[in-house]
Amino acid sequence: MTKVNMIQVTSQEEAAKFVKQRLAEKLQQGQLNNIGLATGSTMIPVYKELVASDLDFSNVTAFNLDEYKGLSASSPNSYAYFMNHHLFQHKSFSSTNIPNGLAEDPEAECARYEQLLNDHPLDLQLLGVGENGHIAFNEPNTPIDSITHVAELTDSTLGVNSQYFENDEEIPNVAYTMGIHSILQAKEIILIAFGEKKRAALEKLVAGEIDQDWTITYLLTHPNTTILTDLQL
Ligand code: GLP
Image: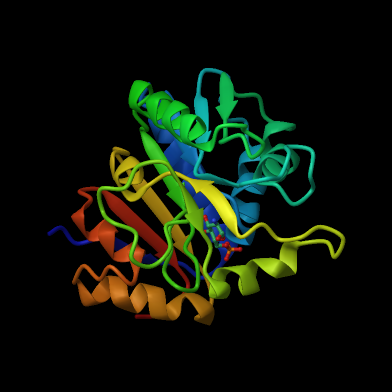
């Protein structure tokens, strides 16, 4: 079991600058061919910082963690839309990938995405965390060897995420998500968690024991994970 590297920061901007700096180093060393990206409000300052920077991602291929099943990329509530809005329309990447929320054959879509990940090992994965400790949409009790799959979202996650939905669109209760195994393949992981609502999840992590009910704790098996947080733990 490894210990994650916990760094306390004072603001989301400081966390964003840390990420930018790390990406700059990796780009300079030629070690950023494939990057894993996340959605969520926590990532907005990070993408703002990247957009304002002179970093060049034109040789980097991007992979997103997850997407709501049933939403099209043009739905303002889809993660594809979020990524275009906050990052991709401002910065060009070699290519960008996200599960297709409208895929006709969900099983084939999961297999397609996992194969892409196998063919493009991630040099760095950015992560947020849900209030119930989920990473991507790997809800409590997702096994450590899970690969890309369709996940049923818990009531807690649906409740938290409802704030981002317009009233006229139903919140999907299923989503495509990279699995825990898919995420743990990344060479380096940076997880950002801000605010008291994330304290329970980070406390589970610092307790140092794998707990299937808190999928964030699987990161304890990863050799190079950094946590950026404003919380004192
Ligand atoms: C969703 C995403 C997660 C993300 C989480 C936290 O559930 N699937 O990948 O980490 O939201 O979102 P926020 O940053 O808004 O707290």
